[in-house]
Amino acid sequence: MATIRDIAEASGVSPATVSRYLNGRIKVRDETRRRIDEAVRELDYRPNYLARSLVLKETKTLGVVIPDILNPFFAGFARGTEDEAWESGLSVILCNSDNRRDKEQAYLKWLEYKQVDGIVLVSTGLSSGHLQEILARGIRMLVAGRRIEGLAADRLVIDNLKGARELTRHLLGLGHTRIAVIKVAGHVSTTHERIKGYEQALAEAGQEAAVAPRATAREFRYEDGYAAMEELLSRRRGSGREAFTAVFALNDLMAIGAVNAIQSQGLTVPDDIAVVGFDGLRWGTWIRPRLTTYSVSPYNYGRRSCRMLLRRIGASGENSSYVEEVIRGKLIVRESCGARRD
Image (cartoon, rainbow, N blue to C red; front, side):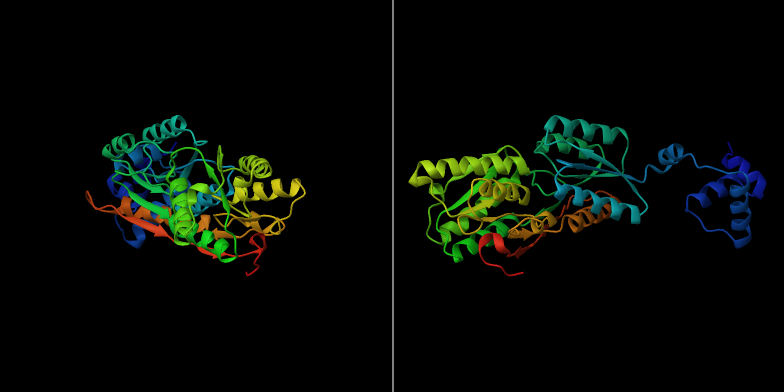
């Protein structure tokens, strides 16, 4: 296998000049460049990227940790980060934590061992203390989607409060006074912020949020939304206090599950029960009736996350001034709420 020294001898320049030229650290005269490039082709030189990364202290690799690759929102997010990284000359190692803290922690440790240049993290809820230890060892990190209070890292989050308020206000404006909600168990900030926005809209309308029927799903998945909706319908039949005419599911996958659960029991959406979701997945346009939602492009979200991380990696010196940026979506009104307006 050809080495830098072999290229230097064939092209008649020093090994140091060859190394700096191939690493893009110096410019050389046209004739020198021609001789080096010709030697590289003739000797079939292959760079030792491991050695290069040790010298330059960079691997041209990013880690991306997401909670559920089966969720099309996170699949779109991962695609966006990968496209942005590729266009910037970097590759991506994609890790799926399955919403498990132990798995997320293990992946972060492995990515650190791999000496990635930075990590985009959609966390399952690890403590800021554990993540701060990683940051203290020099790993650059962008936390996306879920707030981790007390963490000294850049954040890119969705305006969950605003989105949930708009969805709930829209249902209230259509005359719904009993709006059930399908939430998710656990302590993820996404759940708390969307519930808070929902409750704020009810309070503004003079309604008591505590009396609205609620069901708790295990995960943000279709089957969990379906099961939670079945629970709500069972309680609705058994007690007048559990009556409702609309449902806010905290993401689109659960909302689609809820629509199918309602229809499976011979009821119609939205005539019997209106349904809204959150995320803006294309799947919401594939069901009938089409889903009303608060739309955030997961692909653009992923690209923007990667850009923020690359800015942090490229920053010179230590910088204690970390940034939180907010993505604002758009209310998309379709037939599932009873008011079609694209």
